[in-house]
Image (cartoon, rainbow, N blue to C red; front, side):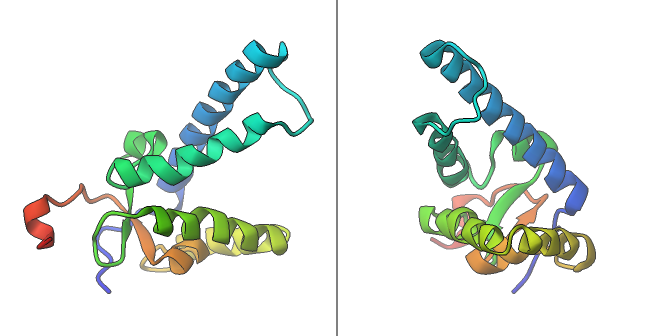
Amino acid sequence: MDVSNPAGFWVRLGGNIVDGLLVSITLGILAGLIYGQWFSLETTWLDVLGLPYYLLVPVFWYGYTVGKRAVGVRIVKLDGDNVTFWTMIKRDIIAGLLYGITFGIAAIVSAFMIGIRKDKRSIHDFIAGTYVTHDPPRSPYESGK
């Protein structure tokens, strides 16, 4: 395992904030257009529309989301290859379930792992076999595939 140029806690948090704002504002506008209100405490089908953003955008955009691109980091597999749909399911859905089952305690542990560990990997990185790096995508000629 060769973790190259890992991204730390604050830059990852910044990217997550940008992504969260982007998804929230977009879904808020959709909710306003469809339901006539921008915010609701009720769960609707719109709440699940943010999930494809987190699952698919990194797969099709070399590990970037808008927020990660804004702060200059991306998600990669441990071998340096681009993430796949299955990788993102493990990273977001399976790890998200773990975070929920532990009432957020695992998420707090993950934050400390990013801040303390030399490789900056968290629980969801271990589950998915990924890490977050400042390195740009490799060219197709470098991967040997």
